[in-house]
Every structure is written in structure tokens, then in C-alpha cells.
Image (cartoon, rainbow, N blue to C red; front, side):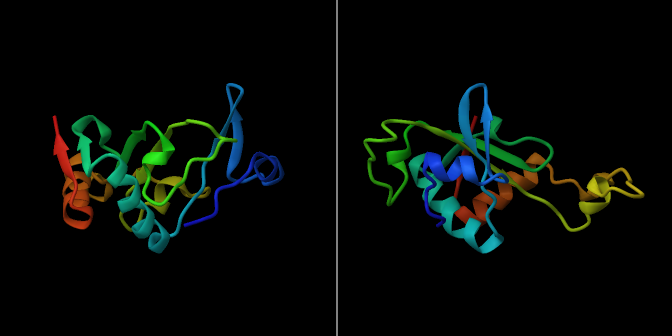
Length: 133
């Protein structure tokens, strides 16, 4: 897992930190191997259960963690106090680049999009996640 950044570090690095409505926001990106290690730890904070509304039709899975101390292996820091966080996982199929590239951009075919059903089955198979209504 990447080391938690301090406020001083966040002001210095430009690609993963930004201010949103006066609050400091972090948007770190993890490689596939790092994500496979951290996602189960984040799901334990939610008791491996997600709502159906956490999944959208573009392959995004978003859920909130009320308090960061619920994450396995994270200790309370009096400087941070109590704070929650939002987690977003983006699932993609090969070929997604044609929709986001700069030149000769094309519309992504329907079979290349990750549906919510595919996202639910992926999470159930790989992370043993239960989905509730």
C-alpha cells in the first residue's frame, strides 16, 4: 500500500492532489497488482457488502467508508482526527483507448463497455462481495 501523504506532501505533488470546495482531495492511482491488494482491505471496512446503487453502467464501482480507522491495518492519527473517504474502482475492457485518445476518437462499441451486471459478477468472483438492494 502506498504511504499516506501529509498535507505538506499533497501541496508539493501535483498529479494526485487537488482542492475541491476548500477540502483537500487525493486521487491516487494504483496499478492492477496494488489494487488487488488494497481493494479487499477496503471492502472489509464495508463487511464485503455493497449496495446495487454502487455500480453504474460504465464499469465504475463507488462506495464510501465512514471512518478511515475501519480499514484493516490503519491506526488512528490525532492529526487527521475522524474522516471518511470515497473509493472508486474503474473496470475497463481492452480497447477502451479508442474512446479517449486524442486523434481519430471513436465511439466505444456496446460490447466493449462494462455493464453493471459484469461489474457485480467480477466483484463477486474476485473479491467475494455480496450485493444488496
